[in-house]
Length: 159
Ligand code: ZN
Image 1 (cartoon, helix red, strand yellow):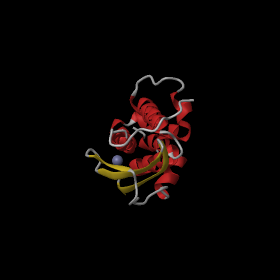
Image 2: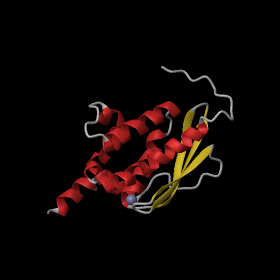
Image 3: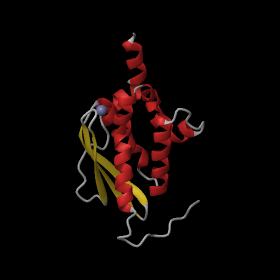
């Protein structure tokens, strides 16, 4: 058993950096939508906020308390989805989920994820996968609420 090597893989520099200095770690009182996520296995809890303008995510932030992986994942998520359409963010959610949980993720999966692919090392730690995907499941819930028919959907160009 060599736990040290595994941890080296798991805590890559990028993840460490986001753990130390989480981006967009703040409440957003004027958020269009928010959702709460709770990973009972680890105890991670977070609230994710998104601001929307015409189907585009103009801002995203989070608050909460969790382990380093869940915090780094939420931090990188809020950076990654800013400026994306809801559809693009949902696509990232699907790709991220594939990368971490699919035994044979599609080849182009890592490419679309960019920096988020740093979490691929978490695949080897099933318990930690829940930590890494928590923010994404929470985003999915927030966006699902956002697409509820309580406001007239604006035409979104699909180029
Ligand atoms: Zn965790």
